[in-house]
Amino acid sequence: MSQLIKTFIVDSFTDEPFKGNPAGVCVLEKALTETQMLSIAKELGLSETAFILKKAAEENYTIRFFSPKMEISLCGHATLAAAKVLFEQFPLLKDIQFTTQQQLNLKIKREGLSILMEFPVYNTLPANVPTAMLIALGIKVFKNSVYNEENNILLIEISDSQVLKNLQPDYAALYRSHNSINGVLVTAPSTQSNFDFESRYFWPWSGTTEDPVTGATHTFLAKYWSDKLGKQKMKSFQCSERTGFMEVELIGEDTLIIKSVAQIVLEGLLRL
Image 1 (cartoon, rainbow, N blue to C red):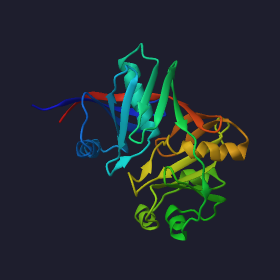
Image 2: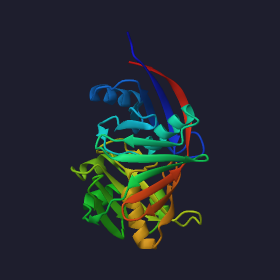
Image 3: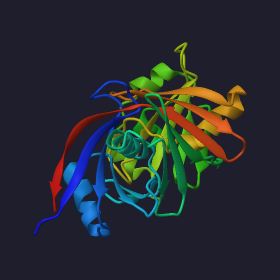
């Protein structure tokens, strides 16, 4: 007999359907194998699919993230999507705790229509960027480059958000330019009055070509810009084709609050 799995597609970090970053969410009644979860992620074809399984306590769930290529340790937009699904299904639910495969506990709560996610804060270290990568990205001049170990991501800061918006990477060349990272994040100060900084995230090594809006990169991107701008609370805009936004706030040295919204665009049953 086939297994039926409640499955959703949710647009995260947006207040409009068909913008932001779409994530799959599978609400499991029993655990699946890694092979099954990877197959489902490939079938849905989204940048990530979250698989959530209820633990003993009503508000506690395990969560795992899969791109069509591999398991991902932490994914902000799929966490937001999973929380949106649970808050919609259980209107009295106010708080959620997700436990990742790496035993990271993510505390989530709702505040009106917004969802607040508690993430860790990570540091960066100076790093060199291969010339071939800059050519593949179309970057002629950059201000700074650093590396985040926890996410295995390079960050490149440029000075112009319009240049950032207009980047058209050669993804085949970008893939060949490095062989040991998960992705490269390009960021710039925002010229929009209602945002502090902007970014785009490219990850042909571990996912799709470009991730439309990326929550997990803010685990180090928020601290990076906080140190530069002297702010603990900031607004971030991801200037991909779909675009998306979030508020970030650093609470002490170790905790980041990411606040945004999400839209459920599809609900159904996946037959396994």
